[in-house]
Image (cartoon, rainbow, N blue to C red):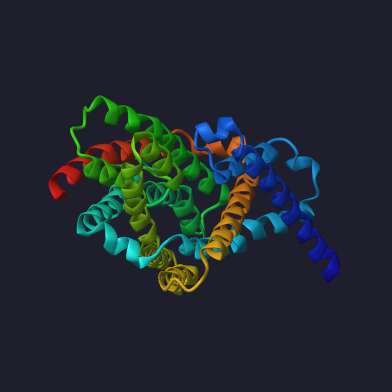
Length: 336
């Protein structure tokens, strides 16, 4: 019985791995590269395609394998994400970037919670959407999901909102730069881009469309935001425990231990002990694990669940996007 159960789990994992391989293949096409569509985004789209077509024709015993990908593999992917960062990159960009990123992350999270309550949104969905907008898009939503303990379809909805507005920014920012409407220097534009755009892929795409110098600075600013994921996850864990305490007398704080793993990996990577080729291989493996997690989340998301979520999550993401555009611009001019 044990081996049969393990075999069913393996079937679900292999199914998600197959879809993830397809996502990587599609991401390498000219159309996907021109839109900066990462394997993660394509993975969740393929997962949703499966959820709304083949899902009812495959054994339910495969579901545990899919859930394994969306939880255990997700945590492993977040920890390994630390190999993309070093503490040296923070000190290299300077105090202005740290100040702007801190204001953006805190301001976006607080505003998102307030607006979510004003819109009478589901608390978990508002938190996930705000976290994705504040830090690093899909990766932040994925990191917050096991802390908030949200349902998979809520995670997919939150990811969709940040992807939409991040993609718009990828085309909007180069256009604003070329027209000179913003009146920012290249250094300021790098700060503004890295502190505003949602996904790392969007920052890379927009930055390179403007200039290599802007791209380099923007990526570092963005990575500082990514590093703030760990303390935010700890804060969300405390918030989640407090919300649970309101409903029950007995509760315990859920500590997202993978957040500490994330910080430990950044510290280790800062020592530069591993060959560059090995780190690049780990980054590639990490991207695949995160793609599997995204695909698994998509596989748990049907159109009906999107309909139940309604327009409010997209309204919240839109309002947060306006805050990022206006608030980051003013912060950039003031601090730098």
